[in-house]
Length: 336
Ligand code: PHE
Image 1: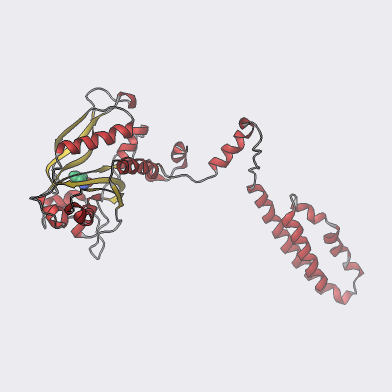
Image 2 (image 1 turned 30 degrees about the horizontal axis):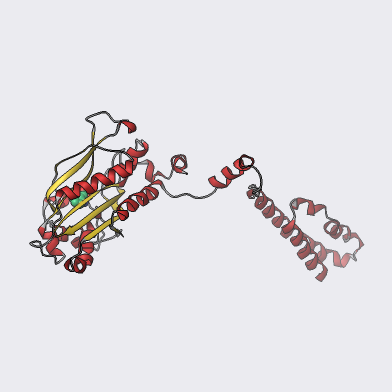
């Protein structure tokens, strides 16, 4: 049956190269295999017929594969010398067939970009952490009720998927200590995914994103913090904004504040409509001490808030659940 194996190879090669693979079934070489049966000695016909049948199964499978491969290749090459609108339909097709960044990833990059241009170093937060970084280093006493406010998940081993990016404060402070003591400053942001045991609705998710900032120097103060935050929000929304603060409680800052912006008219806001954007304040002396930084010599401020609400305001998104839904109709609105 040597001849048949060779014919099979030959046919498969032709199928692989053909733009019309089904036509190979009309090929004389293929049809000839069948017409040959009648010329064979009856004792050979059984084995021969089986070999031809096996070949048929292999070749037909290859044909179907090639047909679907050709169907996938409907994007034609672009004539780069043609006027742009000649290619517009093709470009559109190419573009929607590519994956794109998730809107939160994209906006997180915008946020990181703004802060790094102000001189902050960026640290990605961890997705699993420990009690010390979640609470202990942040001046939450053991068994303090403020711990309950974070609705933390916990693994059986006692690890914590962080409920805020403040888990990175102690690391940023420790890493910056030498630079601070050499006369410099600590300026870092941490960003990443955080988790809370929340009932999900239009404004609550169990999984969301935060960005946090930490700044320490000999003279850091609240007006520097407010200037930094105002600059950030004005760059992010591309316009002048009204800001205000009100007292807020977080064990790791003193005083602690909630920072709000007036919802801009261009984004559908009415005068006097305030949106709370983040928590902030002067870093508590115990938090500096936990990183071995002398609170009588140095002072700092910190802030932290959710990324989703920033993005929802920017694009008029009404339901937080869209982000984690995986719905393509939603995600495609952010293709650019
Ligand atoms: N970690 C706080 C939260 O998630 C926000 C915050 C960060 C407040 C830094 C003050 C300083 O609620």
